[in-house]
Image 1 (cartoon, rainbow, N blue to C red):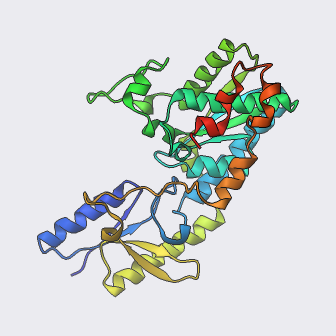
Image 2 (image 1 turned 180 degrees about the vertical axis):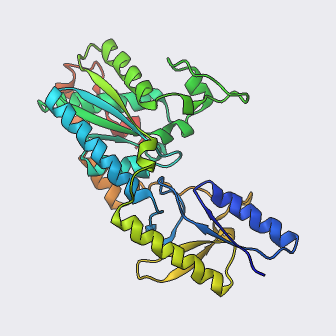
Length: 312
């Protein structure tokens, strides 16, 4: 008798890898085939193939973000939106780019510098002042919650936010609204530099995990389900089922993508490709050519220049 074990989820890929090793060690024959399910889109699938759930979550996130942006336009205010995405910025970037947000902040942007609240807030202010210079009195900023996972505990302890901490001394991020945190810090900074702009927080959270799937994911999940049976019949195990763009099904072996500890590293947003650079360069932020005009609002405009903030 053969037993098929199908596991889905981003963090369970590592668990599946450990299960495979345990079974092999004890000479137990179970076929373990992992399904790439996560709205975070952070599993290392080939050819940048998305994880299932990502397209549906992004689609719903864009609806929410677009409605928020229209509220900003009609009310003459700013909104600080925080999107899910535990370690990678795919979801926030996909939502922000699709909704044409003037500022998108994801953890992958900080590859040359430490992720800090100060740098994130200065990026927000850079966009706000740029829009003021352009004569635009509204806007929206989207931040990936993943930035918290790249912050040191010391950075969070030294912030103006009163976190609660677990038994290991780590901030309990699941108990707080990240959008509220960033909006509070932004308002504090704007008050210090005497720029009168109102902003409001919006959390894009679990609701985008609980919506009806798009046509893309309906078809994709069917292909993955059929693919699991196909790989099972081939005798494959210890792998992720991959549905290629040409319709073929392939196994992605967990041993080939795991580190020395057996953990599957997340697929991060590629900030070196042209698609990212086009969006990054189109965001509203202070450029060197804006420094003179920006001095009306900022004592040192160069501190709000994105390339200086991000060490580029």
